[in-house]
Image (cartoon, rainbow, N blue to C red; front, side, top):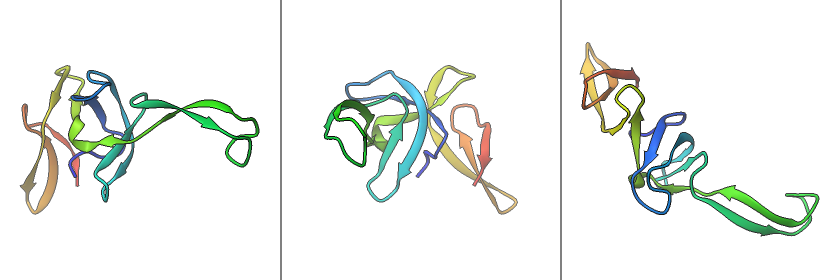
Length: 104
C-alpha cells in the first residue's frame, strides 16, 4: 500500500470530503485507514471496562483507503504516490514533482 502511518492525507470521497488529517492506523488486510478527525461517529456505551460511566462517546472509524490521497503541504494539493528504484533501493516519490518522500 502506498499510504502509510503518519502520512498527511486528504479525504477525496464520502461525507468527510475535503478534510485533512494524519493516518493513525493502516489495516492492509481490510484496505482501511484510520485518519484523525475523520469519520467520527457517536456510540452509546454502557458502564463497564471501556468506560467507567455510560453515555454517548464520539469515536473515529476506519475509511476505505481508496477514499484518501496523500496531501503535499508544499503544493497544497493531493498527489499520487509512486515508487522508483535507485541503485537497488526502493524510494517512495511524489509523482507530480518527483520528490523523494522516504526510503521503503
